[in-house]
Image (cartoon, rainbow over all chains, first blue to last red; front, side, top):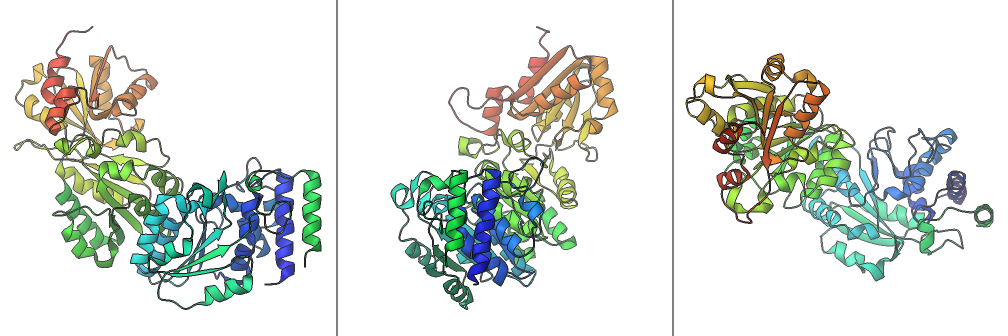
Length: 256
Length: 304
């Protein structure tokens, strides 16, 4: 993917969060590359994207902005009174935001329902679901994984933003599921593990032909692209000061 | 009621396509539906949270989805999925819970549904249907299928006396006239009242009403019922559900909102497991004092 596109997206994400004085940047930056790639290069009109890790709503809004599906006026309403641009997405008001998410462990079941009904109605299109890694501590996800595998939903791709950090610690220190790949493989689905910031690798992984549901584990870095945010848990929560915002912008502008 | 529900759904499916999901329950009841629906019938396994989310996803894709399980496994286990995935979006998902109240009797407390409609009515867009008799189920399944939105059907065991001539279905029905208190009952429990009161002289018995749809919409409350309340100033509500969020509280709210002149308001409701002992549905009803005989004796007591 064009580096300029991702730089543009990253700068806009920072601006939106800074102006709203809102945190949650870490998980947005880990997810942003893949979400921008999906929305700008992959998704067709028939496809559906379900953001299960609702706390990355910022990245979703920016991905839609990159594609021209949200404008600057909409982004200026992020977290504002009387708007719809909430910190966790509210579903239904925008064609590309089908579901309200934010409580973890819901998105995959919803995505499965969409994929299942597409199969029943013989409709075209693919469903993509995007979860976090900490979210896999939710039992409902494993129920969904069983269902998805059993019904061989080959019109569904699950992407896991594995940035290794969750709300109050590292995933390996809290309830480790690593190696996650072997857990998923045990369900007889096609699992790939890639650098989640390498969109060439993502393109290849998405292109794999399969008759099984597909899972792509995106090995990512929380706060990716901003030196003082990378792999630091506090950026799950903190808003930026003016000085931090200026430094972050500078780092993105100077990145290759 | 399960078999009647199954047949009603078979008939509904013949008219309009929907998806039916069961949480691995329905043996000796749902087989005809499974046969009629083919791939549109899904056993989602013992995984109710996923089942409800998937149902919401299916509904968002344009097909009505019915979801079935034993009542507490359907409203309590996946409550957040009902709240977030179904009700917040106003999706067309119909929940069918078998075993309202103490219906599963000695199977144990985990299988009882004592707070189902109270809990579900706190959710936006949710409508509740509580058939009192098997005949109601046929009407209600058709009614639920005919509009888009979340709903819960609370099934029990029909207790209609053999020779009782049931009036046509309505959300509110007067089953027996009488000169005594206004008595409002919800669910199959009412069958026992019909049985006993049917043998009493109308001058010595309450006026018996049954309510089958919730929440209580003021516009649905029949004029005849309001007139009876005004004339008698005594109301008694009976339900196989805890007091909190129950019909008694809802109807008390209606009475106060309408400023009806009620001098005596009695509410008989489920009280959990008072003795710590367990038994049949009849055992638990009697222990809580919601069985017909117990209620009728209690309301004959003079005013406190």
